[in-house]
Length: 287
Image 1 (spheres, rainbow, N blue to C red):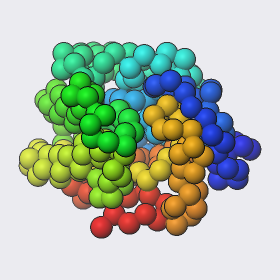
Image 2 (cartoon, helix red, strand yellow; image 1 turned 180 degrees about the vertical axis):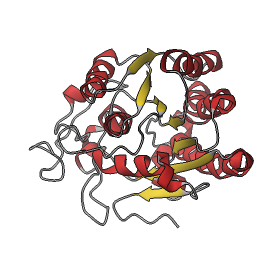
Image 3 (spheres, helix red, strand yellow; image 1 turned 135 degrees about the horizontal axis):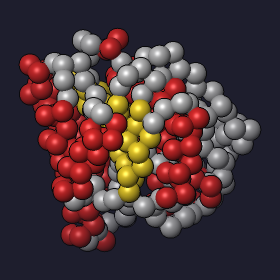
C-alpha cells in the first residue's frame, strides 16, 4: 500500500475538474499494484470492464489480469489513466484492448462487446463499473440534461452492454455490476446518483432471474466510500477532507480493498452465487 495511503493519513481538501485524474489525487489511491497476488482463478477468461482506467475499475483490471484474464478496458477519455492501467495488465502477461468512448451511446456499447470477441477471442465476464455523479444541495439545481446523463451512464449503459453481451456469454459466464451503499442509504446531495444505484441493484437481481436458466450469473458489488477520482472531481473540497470518516473503520476505503470481491464473483468458485449484492462498505449497514 502506498506510504501516503488514506488508511494512514487524512485526506487534504482538494478538487479536480471532472472526470478527474489519478496522478492529481493526494494521497495516491491504492489499486493493488504492489500487493495483489493472483492464483490463477481466471485463467483463459476474457473480461470487459467499464470505467477501467482508474479507481475501482483499475483495481479490478489489475486483479483480473493477475488471475489470468485478458481485458478489454473501456473508459471515456482519460487516456493517461487508461494507458497506465493497460501497462499493469501487460506486466501481468495478459492481453489488453483499450477502448475510449461514451457508453451512454448504445452503438458504442455494442462495438465494445464486438471488439472483445473479435480481438480477444471470446467474452466471459462483463463488469459494469463506470459511473457518473454530481453533488447538489437542491433538486432545483439538477438540470434535466444532467439527470439524463446520470441515468444513461449508470443504468442505460449496463442494460446496453448486458443486452449486447448475453449472446456471447456461455454457461459459467457472469455479469458483475457496481452498485453502492447509496442504493440502501441514499444521501440527499447525491440524489441522481443514489437513484441510479437503487436501480442497478434491482436490475442485478432481476437479470439474475432472467439469465439463470442460461447458466449466466449476475451479481453486484456495493462499495461504501472509496477513494477514486470521482470523489475530488465531484465533491466540494471540504467534503473530500472528511470523506469516509463516518464508517465503522473511520476511514475511506481503497480500490484495492474491493478487488477480491469482484474476483470471487467472476470465478468458478462462485458458481452458486447469483442475484447477490456483496457489500464492501467499511461497516456501513446495507439493510
